[in-house]
Image 1 (cartoon, rainbow, N blue to C red):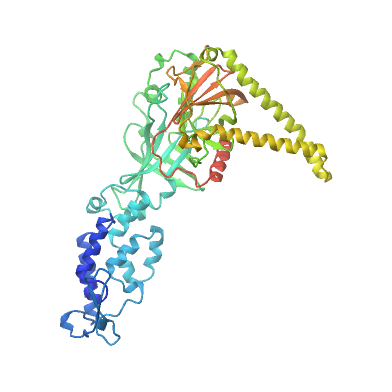
Image 2 (cartoon, rainbow, N blue to C red):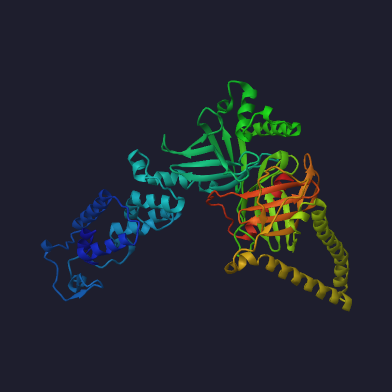
Length: 564
């Protein structure tokens, strides 16, 4: 760098330039250019200057003496005579192309990778500088978070430029969260950059009923450049190791995977061995250990159905909801208990005075994509003492009383709507109608006020979390997990979606939403006399959050249409 400064005849001296570089290192700047690359660039620059006949060194004899000006560091000087038009030294840079090569490397490293092809079109000099591995190494780290030692990979024959151009950039569209199209069962796929690979991890809930255990992961495919100069797609399904696969991207926010060697999925013992292996992985037990006959039928049905998709799958993009300051708790992914269907994954989101849980994985009764819970945050429920909580009839009386009130309001709104439309068509509103409108506005304001007070535990964090109150399940309510929190923060009226096999006769049934803490909540299904416990997924999921609430709500609508 000091050589280039003297060759150009401008800029800071060696001492000042060295001090500047030390300051940059102290501030944590990412200047990881190899010494060999720097010497090569400097040598190339020096050769260009000598070939051009412009010498800035003492042997050139062309430097004109003149007054000097101290730089801002006070330790270097610029000769004004060297800036004179009659000087034989190099002129002051008039364009970006005249900057020192190592400075251009720093500038190009800050540009997004998508802009670099246009930079190469400027001229031969820029194209040569863009061959510097430092630029592409930084783009891989900045845009895709690669943490591996890319220099080691370059020694093995794969350049950082090839990694970016042939692997990371072309497949950037598949990074993030996806839902596989497996009928009612759905799923959760997370595609990430993992070292020198792009890997699609299928997330599986823990074995029933251990809802608070961490998620399990299974690789479905991977993409790499280890064995050739182009990206290689491999299927990871089965028990015979990676094998040839393919990925197709057609529609926006959708892609498909295909296995070209399905024989790797088969096992020597045939379908029976495959079923036993799948059952142990999926449920953590054997069929003989599952005594419930209905549960055995559900498990066998799922194995037969999902086995049809072991060679080709289509995925659709999904998002996590954005976090809002007024939310009752952080939205996100939760795993919950669903009786004989085992554990399923839901996404919890907030929409005004409503909290909604939508299924990402489902079952033959209520498939993935459906709204499993709809909670009205403007209707809190005050629990009685522990003795009365144990009485299912007492709890039912509280919740059903709110449910009846909701139904009356919905019926009244249904009656008022035609009259309002008719009155608007006639262009006249009576005093009675105006009074009703004012009344409805006042009721709405009361609900919002109630909702705000219900959510004040989160919005006014300075006051601390709300005081916990004792909680116990009523006698006769079934719970897959007998270990559940014995204190809760708040309770709200809500409805849950139930249906017959094949999603027949779906209906919303009243229940009680119970908030335990930031990472756990529950729902009591009164009609079913069962309890579902939900626990937050704590995995870090990159490229997952929706850009805004409009994108997230559009995604929810699309999810419901996929499985309806």
